[in-house]
Length: 364
Ligand SMILES: Nc1ncnc2c1ncn2[C@@H]1O[C@H](COP(=O)(O)OP(=O)(O)OP(=O)(O)O)[C@@H](O)[C@H]1O
Ligand SMILES: [Mg+2]
Image (cartoon, rainbow, N blue to C red):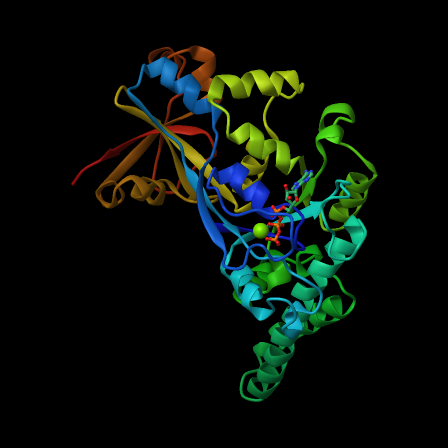
């Protein structure tokens, strides 16, 4: 489950990556500084764990993690081999979701590959490369499906979706913006299209905009307007400041954030949003030894969730003693919540919800 950080050269991708992962990837003020993708594992902040940690007086807290890929800058013509060309399109193919960094800061000292700042044009440049690459895939697939259709009439439905996708791509619109049924999405997922990947637009603003303008400027507005057409989320950050913040110790960090008038760093917000973008949720386990968040796909049933902890628990699954985190928090302890009848005994068909605190009963 990886996210790829994508964008034009020199817009702040590696700076953001370093801030998120504290990894120290090379970032520099020249285009194509990054060639091979950097990979970083990032803990997902979860305040619920702090509450449980206090409640259980646990020895240890374990957060979940996701992986970020810092990909090389993409330029116009990449789908035809320009810049670093198909090589990084293939890196994008490997990730489940995309963080698209868009330059929204003015700084004469930082080169823009097109000579001027223009978020809409930048977004379009990147998206079109992904769209061109998808077009090739779709065309090949349509040819193949037409041939196979002669022997198998069932493929007619698929062909219709493929044609619909082709038309959308030809209009320069990403597949993720399409209005499709659940069945159609399930089919689309099998096609591995780049423009179908879920996306967050990450607007990278200057320090001044962060402090003085409440993270808004005319560029961010452009990004928001575009993102809306795809129902995509926008997260505003200042990568440069975030990198500075990331280098601080926890206490200094809190003080600095307060000084800037921020409740949480933009990064924490970005990481949380990224987690949801991957369609992941967390269930929690708690005890005196450890409190821990576990990652599952939304829609996972109790036994498979248990399998994340240990395959024996999945195999011998009896039931899941489950309580919603908020209920547990409101009552202060498991015993009090139990008394109020808030702990449910869930069976093998129960679909685990985000924030469920679970104790699995099993038998092997
Ligand atoms: N919010 C910001 N304000 C001002 N300068 C910034 C901001 N974010 C990044 N920069 C600067 O922009 C330059 C390019 O950053 P970075 O190397 O992270 O870009 P990149 O997108 O990874 O580029 P490449 O595609 O070449 O790898 C650096 O000098 C960095 O300090
Ligand atoms: Mg870079």
